[in-house]
Length: 211
Image (cartoon, rainbow, N blue to C red):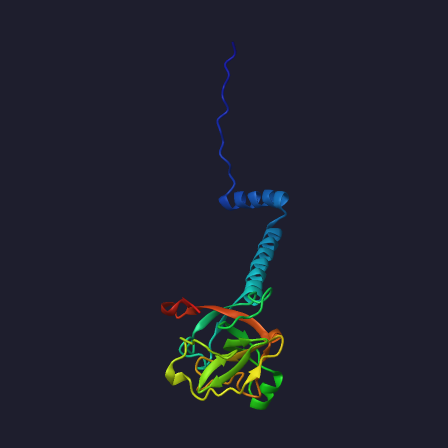
């Protein structure tokens, strides 16, 4: 019986870089190539950015407090989270802290940039509001305001008036410096100018709390 000799195994002479290029060529034929994979990653990244942008502008918006009109509830520099969906299916309630825009004429008269304001809703459409002996009253009843300290009251005289339909009456918690619905240049705020509700303070972290 003839002797069968086994052919010795010969290792490849290709370098590591050549092997990698060959593998990439096979991948290109199967997956569309390096350029296609890069484009696929770029589209994925754009989609993530768009989703995050949508969340920020449509749902939840971190807003920095600028000024002292909401002391002691909100301090200058605090970053709060504003819920832009809060009033999609309901209207603001008394006690809500809202982000809103004043009438266009206010910014023109004050000669200041057009920017949002953060205030507390103290009366809603149909309510009668006034101050009696320096005390805020709504529908003839004194309003319990635990957030208001004595040194923040200032001159909070409010003439007796009924809040128009589709409007809210807003005040700052620090009424000694706040420009709000007490001023003729502001007045009751139309609901269409209320853009969200403050939910919590995010920063500084040590002050993290609901509002």
